[in-house]
Length: 172
Image 1: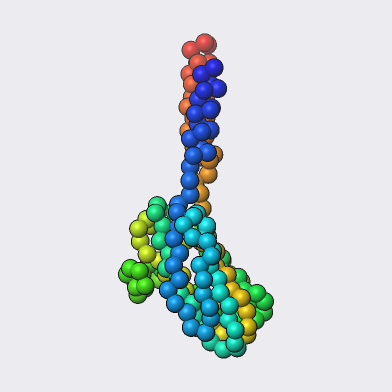
Image 2: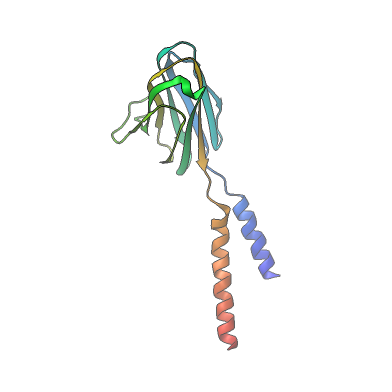
């Protein structure tokens, strides 16, 4: 009976684990429309359209309520319409602020994804700059990587194995 109760308590604790709450804000764009479609969850979605051939950029701020890993995905439709662009990601000085040293840049020519780690309460910029394309629609998705439920089931399992080992040692 004790093992069943321990299992149920561990299961309830593991199911109650939530991913971080992310907040994405559109800061500005040129040559493209910009919108944030889903916000204040562990997944935030934004996007826009480029209506003319030429150069454009789109800038977003991102903040998290807890330290968390994230996956960022940029996609373009049609993906062949993007001639080239630079993705810039890093810590910024505050809302709509400037990039602090250590920001990363990625030269891209199509769909792109990367992972990063956010610190709670720190502002980050996720921008696509120096983009050149034909008419296209772009989307950006940022999702928090949740702590696996198995992590919280692992500790009670170890305690159980140690208990069984001790019990068998005493019986011998």
